[in-house]
Image 1 (tube, rainbow, N blue to C red):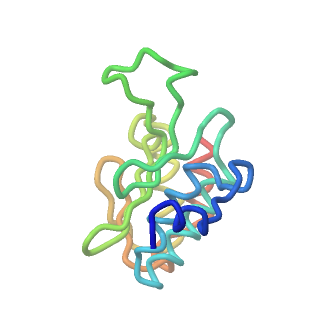
Image 2: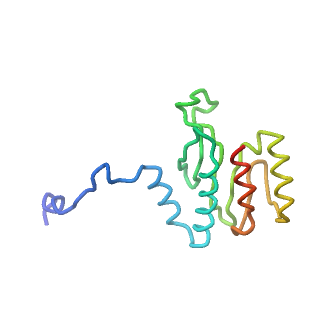
Image 3: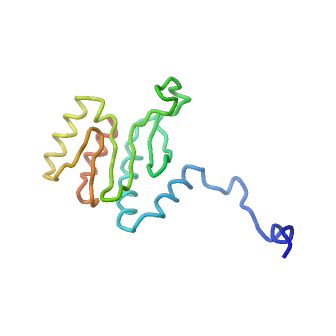
Length: 149
């Protein structure tokens, strides 16, 4: 079959019918995950989206779903990239939630640590990275409050 004939058979969706590029990127990232991890990342994403402050936008950077202050709002960053506020990733042995506000703000960090401890769940945390293996390991209500700031 000639190329022109094959192209004539292909129906491209109208631009208005397409999902925004970020949603396609997020869907593609989630699609590649094992079922249990996909469900966990989707639940964490829902909590993050429901609690984001105004002006923060969702993006994808490599294997991370990120929530950032866009360059249009704050163009003078140290590396010329948007400021990250929250990020979610599926790593080799665990999933991770990066909470830059908890890292940068001592009051917010102390509140987050106290609330997390009160849940009785074991906290596995680096500077801003909360690592978890199953969704049940992560207190989503505490995460939501941390995202709110």
